[in-house]
Image (cartoon, helix red, strand yellow):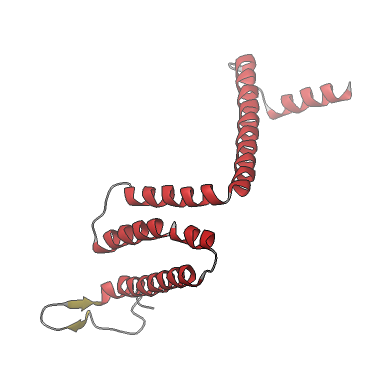
Length: 162
């Protein structure tokens, strides 16, 4: 509704002499407001869970999440302010921090996930390699020849009838 101007809003929505809110910036302003609300709720939930936990191990595990949260906030503030950094390196620090937290505290799950990923990657490489090898062999055997679909069907039916 905001982007299509279904409400017939003016181009300048609000001004106080120094700041101006244009209709074209209303959508990003709502996004930033929603982001701010969710961020505050996330920080409050994390701090309340850490403060109310009775087990020291759980409190310690929750404490590890502060670094990824801070790096996420830093990156999003830079993103919303318009300072575009090539490749978003702060997100890399977030991913490293989250991988450390998950990798050090959920080792059995991580082993199962790693095993599944390795099996998937190995089988994908094997299947793709098989198809590429078959394609290259067919190209080497019949590279210059123009073989029609009927010829392929005849060869297939002849080989399957044996």
